[in-house]
Image 1 (cartoon, rainbow, N blue to C red):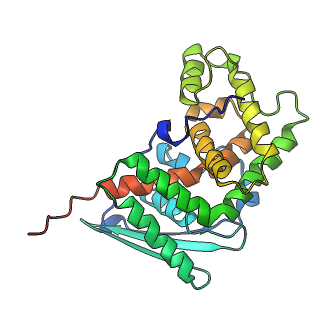
Image 2: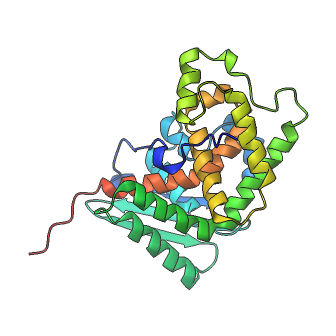
Image 3: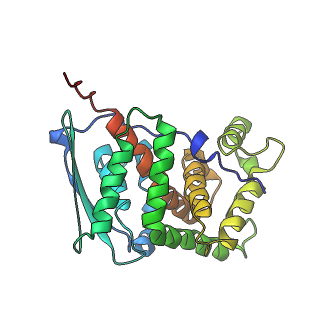
Length: 269
């Protein structure tokens, strides 16, 4: 099967257009039990948190960043609520809370995330890889729940004529070439068939605890969901769930990018 994913080493990187300051500071809460309600909201179809960075969403980019950071703190499959606040004014202060006391393990995990992200002497890719590994270790229950959501929609679409993946013939040739390049699909192969193969792969291994599979799931979902042109190719409800799965990588990319935008620390005398 075409893996269909550029994975982390070739995935496009999002970037904020503005560095938040004290005036921009807000807080946000993620209660990730709302998936079903959001999926029924047609205005939200095809949209996930990281996708809002490139849209005309009512949320500011700063609040989207907070949503992504809060997602990294949701470690349980259900009934886990996290809230975050971020202040950047030459330095960064991060505040977080939950609907229950943080455990020692969770506090260590948060410190680990910011430690990896702050290692600005290392290249960005290596920091992304370490961060995603840490996120998968801590958030795998929620990640598996999101994989299950994608698989559920895949099964719902199996009886439809196109299985929720529309033919690329409706798109201009240059758009098809762009999407195949982004997803590392062989130019001679069908984009539709490659996407169906990816869905089948995710569906058949959804219960896997293998960390490499979970890494493949979140990074390939991020790569698939990032191009806005996918709105014309994939069933909107399925696309929304794919993008929500990919938000873990979006959160990592944004965290590293936000830290890299801080001014350099003064060297010690």
